[in-house]
Image (cartoon, rainbow, N blue to C red; front, side, top):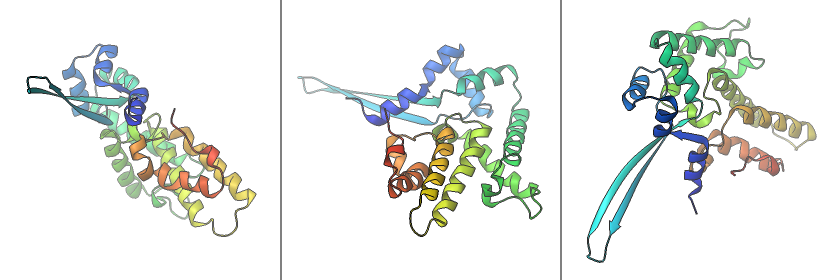
Length: 228
C-alpha cells in the first residue's frame, strides 16, 4: 500500500518531468524560469534510495530525486514564458496582493492591521508584509498551503487564519449555536482557499493547530477535512 504522504503529493501535484513534457520545455528553460523568479521553486522534493542485492552478497544503490509543483504552475509558465519580464511580474504580483487586501471585507485582520484609524493603508507596513509574501511565493510555500497559489488565495488565507485566531481569543464561555455557526462560516472560507497539507505536515499546519482542534471542541468533527 502506497504511503499516504506520497499519494497526497502525487495526486495533487505535478512532477517536474511531467511539467516539462506538458509544456514542451527543456530542463534548462524551466530552471531559468525559477532562477529569474517567474515561477516558484518546487513545493515538495521526494528523495529516494533503492538498494539492489543478490545472493552473491553484493549490492547496488540507486539514488533519485523528484520535484513536485502545484498544478497551477502550468498557467504560470504559459503566461511568463511568453511575457518574459521578471521585474514586471513581481511588481504586478505585489500590486494584485495589495488590491485584494484593500478590497477585502475583513482587511483589518491582515498582517497585524496595516490600516490606520481612518481605514487608510500604511504603505510602508504593507510593502514589508507583501515583500515577505513574495518571498514565500518564490520558495514554493504557497504551493503547499493554498489551493491555487495566487494573489487572491494568499490574501484570503492570511485573513482566514487571523479571523480564526480572533475567534479562539474571544470564544471563552459556553458553546452556543451562534458560535458554532460562526465557526462553520470560518471553516467554509478557510477551505475555499487552503489545502489539506500533506499528512505529515498536518499537525503543525494552521489547519491542524487551529481549525481541526476547534471543530473537535465544538463537536463538528464531521467538518474536518479528510484525505481520500
